[in-house]
Length: 183
Image (cartoon, rainbow, N blue to C red; front, side, top):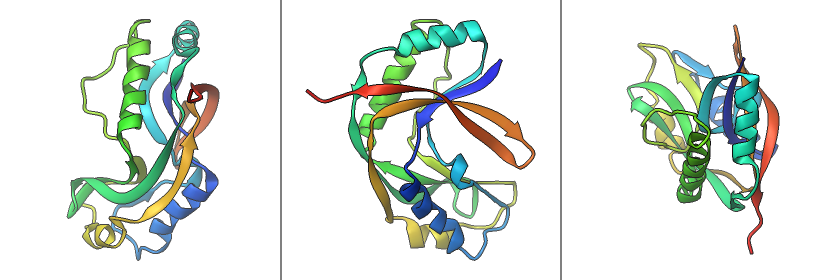
């Protein structure tokens, strides 16, 4: 069994720009910052998947996924109140093609028996996670709320394996599924 999710890899230049948020912040109490190797955009979390289900997954995602699109990473926000956040994230623009890709992946995987929570999809890149009673990120949000971190063409979806380690999750790309070229 492997713990898997589908997501987007980020170019190194975008990762470097995102890491500046941490480097220029004078510390936020309780923040567990993501490393460069942990930065990605999750499209669909799959959970524990056995080998048989892996074959079904690959078959479901084979051929003619959504069309290649450009994606901007911009702005910083949080889940939870800024005075006591759960998660600090960078946003995406435009959101529509990412949401459409998410919907298409879920639809295809549901046809082979995968089941998902009925939860609204909000495309984002996690920058930090917070423990209970963390510090405020209000000043950080004021500084970074409209910052552009870079643009890149989304040309493929990656199948990531997540391995839980004491110092955070380690992500390994197991497979890539290309998007369609525009007509």
